[in-house]
Image 1 (spheres, rainbow, N blue to C red):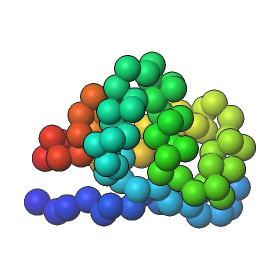
Image 2 (cartoon, rainbow, N blue to C red; image 1 turned 30 degrees about the horizontal axis):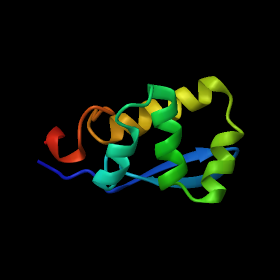
Image 3 (cartoon, rainbow, N blue to C red; image 1 turned 180 degrees about the vertical axis):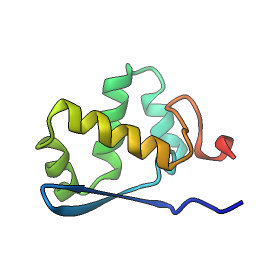
Image 4 (cartoon, rainbow, N blue to C red; image 1 turned 135 degrees about the vertical axis):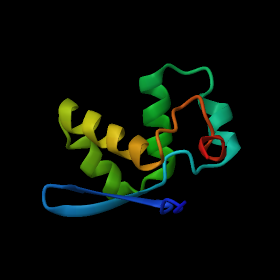
Length: 90
C-alpha cells in the first residue's frame, strides 16, 4: 500500500500551485469549521492552508474550475470529506 504525498499539485492559467493534502491540517481548524456550511468551511480551510499566490489563483477560477479543483484535492487524499480526519481514511 503506497502512501499518498502530503502535497497536492494543480495548475491554473499555465502556472503550478500546491496545497497540503486535504485533511492534513491541525485539529483546531476542524473545530473552527465544524458548524459551518460546506461552502464556508471549504473557503475557511483554503484561507488557512493556502498562501496568497495560491488564493489569488483560486479566486480567479470560475465555479466549474473551483469545483474540479476541490474534487481533485479530495480525491488525492483518498476521498476524505469534511466530516472525516485525514487519519480516518486509511
